[in-house]
Image (cartoon, rainbow, N blue to C red; front, side, top):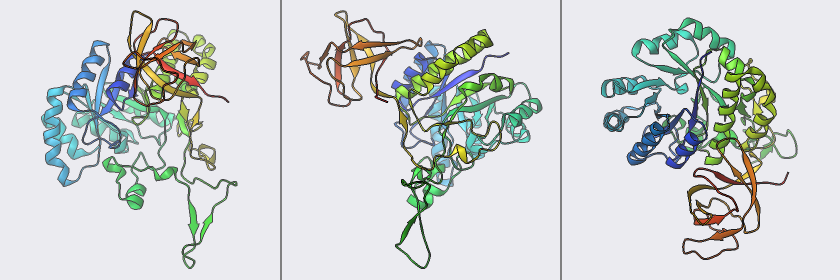
Length: 409
């Protein structure tokens, strides 16, 4: 059985490096144009070059998303952008608009073209269509079942790859084609500016009584009509492989390094365990579940993989994430005198018990012995986000180790 690719998102150069360090075979990123995550940090040309060089040096690939649905005004800029990408040299471009696809094929013929889930790829004739135009890979629509994916695999050329989302946030609309954000806020989801109104709390106003807001009660906290649970297929790796999926994709280009690291190393170990031995995979299942619930998430569902979701796939009483750990920082450098350099993400204190999260799957509980600022002055706590610090945790650390704090139940 072919080993699938593990594909992780990255919102920044730092997160790209974490994804690769924690087990990604490939990373997908957005540039400063034509990406459906316009509010993410995204990558400058210089960051792309550095990220691609880092990934290639570590045996990984980088794919660049350019999957907006383009208007006439976008086309000239698209030509300029793809000329720039041709020089930068990512491993693939992720596209959805046929016009943008044609421009990419013309200007970047030597860069693989992958078809985004945004193109609503729900049947094998669609896969054949894109393959005939020169696509190397097609991303399945999230609305497909495993049975449908198996049928697609049986009806398309072996050379055409299938990529499928197996973990992360679910969109309430059809493969992301949503007008709700544009209608309510003027920010177009299909141009990369979604405000996620599917997560908002709603009330009803009767036409003849304007200004009288009537809540739709599920319980005393109100109702969130469109708020889907997050997708998680960690317990179903064998079924994903049997369906013929070539690339397991994790959603989350707006997420933190801690989220990406947790997802990467959990799915990395699950895939590797199963490829070694199905018994090993089953034996380690409790570890996978503990790890994949250690990040932020909105409860879990299997989406459409086993049929159309029921009302159990929605969260009607809340729109907040569950959170087990707080992200404190990434080890950026290690000093001989036992100090490691981090950029602080959340406050922590001298004497506090925290955890070191390592790419190899181990977690170490340690005590913060010392915190020093850049001038070498000792501090009782790290109160300022993004502050450069040196910390002594009483044991050697390695670059890309993540520091986190377990929150009380």
